[in-house]
Image 1 (cartoon, rainbow, N blue to C red):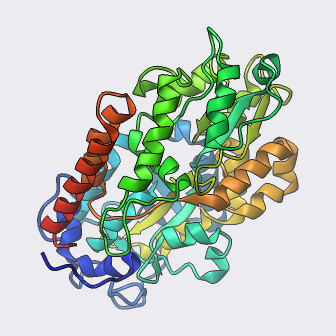
Image 2 (cartoon, rainbow, N blue to C red):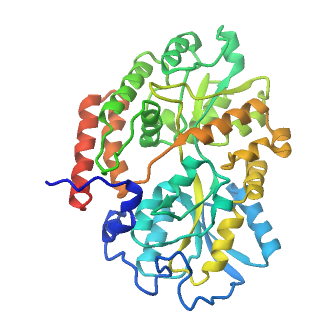
Length: 440
């Protein structure tokens, strides 16, 4: 098959047209936009251009606000300061993307704004389901460049970063000292060598909290190895870098330096196990640091953090920031965009971190007196470093791509499949997928 000419992956997204709709899991039909879609491609609100500011909006939140007190606090601030009421629809995380897809396939104006992960953007934007936010440099320059790039497609910003989820290396300083280890491992090799000292009958040296998602774990270590999933021509290119990852994990598994089974990557379980003292160190993507500081038997003298152990190329962590986007079918775009901007200001980012412990997506927040007084400076320094060095990719057909990856690399990570064969099979399947939908 003749390859398309090289082009940057940030330029093809809008041109993908119906491809984006086909790529969405469980979706079919035409995802192209007409005059009623809410976006004319200019970045301006469509219609007459004289839309008044609505006095209410509907916001789809990923899960219950009971577990998102930072978001809830900022919504209350928004309502108080703007007079715009927010009707919150608390949609279970596992159902949110399906709910939005069903609504937007019917060009329904039910939802005005939602929060979700950056990795949904490519498919949603390609289907013309999101409205450019027009936030401007004065707002977007608050975020690190790597995060700005992740939410900007075809020169337009489609998501305002709200709060962060990326790797943070935490360790039990008391256990380290008891085992004669004076500092955290600085490289993958040191994770293995120091792991031998840290291993005891009741404590594993290392674990992950990537919520049972082997793909997320793989991506983080792939970026540390200097690899990536796709090149600028949309070709999957992860086999070579992936073998560095698999070699590292094979050492961890065969030398009993991580708990048995893929379940050791479970977000909640690994956090509970770390606080129970059964893990010497953990790569955490949750506010686990804040939680551990308040847990019985823990505190600043026991909890410690460090920059992620460096792989063959870098200390990059996987960027999984959540943000707020506005529906292209909303009839209240001005109010919805105002909401997206308000919820992602420096003050809102600070509020989210103070109330909930979510890592701020704005570097300056870590230097504020309020945050400095709430968290140890060494923890903030590492969290800020991780924010500024986090990496990710936006790519079409994300659910299918990740499924093809997971079905191969999960058994390989567990030692049930040859890693080289697993990676080559996954890469071949993804390449064939992209050929079928016209990207290659």
